[in-house]
Image (cartoon, rainbow, N blue to C red; front, side, top):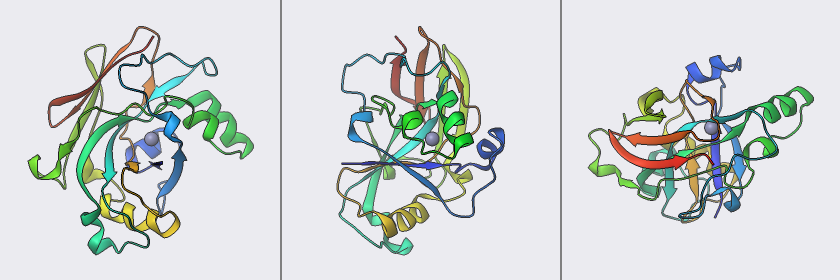
Length: 204
Ligand code: ZN
């Protein structure tokens, strides 16, 4: 399986990092080793001094597809989870300055912790406007609503599947709202979707 991530999908977040609001989705990949194995602690990586949380809604693909028409894209997922796209912001800034790829900043081991539980879309109050948030040490640091995405789930699937065949089990991290920020050893992160806690993570 592969993990496809979307950058700058919320205008306010693009602005907070001084990035332009994109005219087509910004896409990057993480390998399957970016997932955090079940019951495995998350350790602050050595290669960064500025690790940032990015709270994101995650789609899990449930059908094989390529060149998926946006009108049919909703048939390719039926549940969502909560994930953190951990980003070594200092490494990313260095890569961006030099025009180099982002993998060292974004795709390292355990950079994509994922909720153990996914929620069926039809169990949500409004699948077009999913509310989610992240708490750090009990205080809310990010909150978003998927209605504010620049490119919605179906537009993302149509775009991504022009380049990459989507397979069952592939994950799409759909982008982070504003409020990204640093984490430190000892921090406690909790991810919520529609008020339900889906992810609980301590930084070791
Ligand atoms: Zn992200």
